[in-house]
Length: 261
Image 1 (spheres, rainbow, N blue to C red):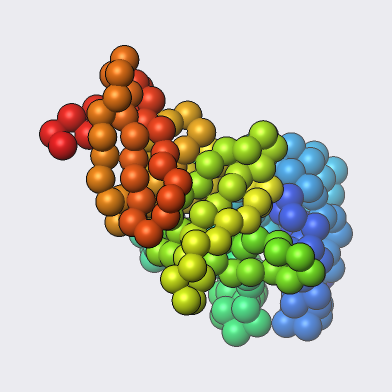
Image 2: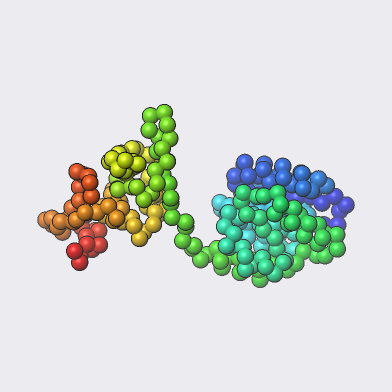
């Protein structure tokens, strides 16, 4: 860490983001020699142990071994800059100034500020800070599962074009083997359908639970589009939609959603 030319390791499981950060660093900090790029946390640790870079740019969310776990293993051996797609994780832990972070996609101005701080630390020949407590805070925040931003659009290929379907226009989603059938209204209010490749389960995780409700293993409905619900035999029910001839099955496992109808 006292060499005349600072060296760096970039660790990110996304190749394009690794390359983009390397290009930005070359423009922002020409003296920095990027000696290694790693695809995951374990590889990053191996590269660090072999090359002992001055600065480690670590993606927080890497498969197998996170950037935080890598930093714990390295300890005071290097200065760290964490890269994250989730800025809210970083705010509290980084405000104390001992660590730096970059938010994806990395912007040149933000990177320049970070580089300035790191260079100041290197120039003062300060040892890398004892970051154990800060890593504890950061890890605790990561373990608090933040609610994802609800999905706003769904992309569907129709013929030779790609249609952006606003989520609020969707009536229902139905699993169809390897695909998901999306039923929605176009700008004229006409009922339309299209198949997309995203699994229903994956879509459900991104939809606003205040509006979208799973009513069957293979069916999700926009409750704002429901006209009425009728009970059937064997603890089942049927959902009828406004302005559509289709009706959707409610299985026994999801009937409790309509107990008070």
